[in-house]
Image (cartoon, rainbow, N blue to C red; front, side):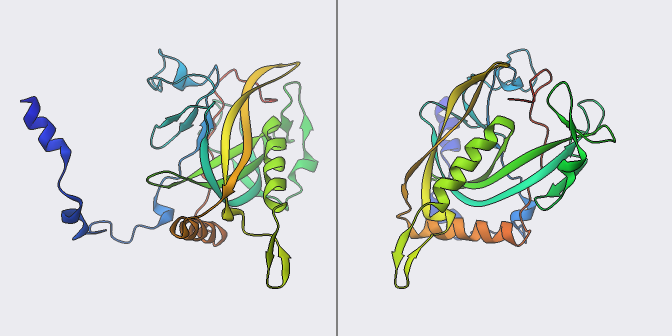
Amino acid sequence: MNQVAEKKTAGLPANVFEEDAAKGLGNIGQQDLALPFLKILGQLSPEVNKRDGKYVEGAEPGMIYNSVSGDLYDGAKGIDVIPAFYKLEYVEWKDRGEGAGGPVSVHDSSSDIMSQTKADANYKDRLPNGNYVEKTASHFVIITGDSPTTALISMKSTQLKISRKWNSMMSGIKLKGKNGLFTPASFSHIYRLKTTQMSNDKGTWFGWDVSKAGPITDTGLYQQAKTFSDSISKGSVKAKHGEEKPKGSASHF
């Protein structure tokens, strides 16, 4: 019985599927797909709590979690990604339990919304209407590997300085072309993302550690990243922000 089951789950040869490549998918575009979030699991993340309905087997604080596939990555070893696009936004929220879970509004980087806020006792930037605003750096990436996939890394609060460091690394790369030195596209290089323990006088948490792995050597991978970047630039791909911090986590982390 087990042998039969194994044969069935082995699947047909790839050439059989290749004959009907993409059939049944209709006109599905990037905008119809759920863009995974890559997030760092913390002590209060539901994915590490065995009594929580969102618990993920094997999940531990400091790991990197893919919100769509459910894949877990060892934060100490890290993962390789290609940064395809960067976007700075100001995301407006209601307090947990008062809204539908999603943001009230997303303000672009040119907005003066932050000038209307005041920091409260919990370090949240409050608007006169009672909502709070989070300055959010969105890094749209390609996760490399046997089957490269798209994902989004959202950096806030203390992680904004990591975002700035990453942006400086990307903009600091110079190559020599026929017209002299130039700055290549962000998706010309691969970066290694690990997690590291951080702390301040308010507590301890896990944050991102970014380092440059090297230039892309695969033309197909470069084109995939370029296409993804163009889709975001044209508005075909948008971040669907969800409230990631579990109840009781500190906003200043």
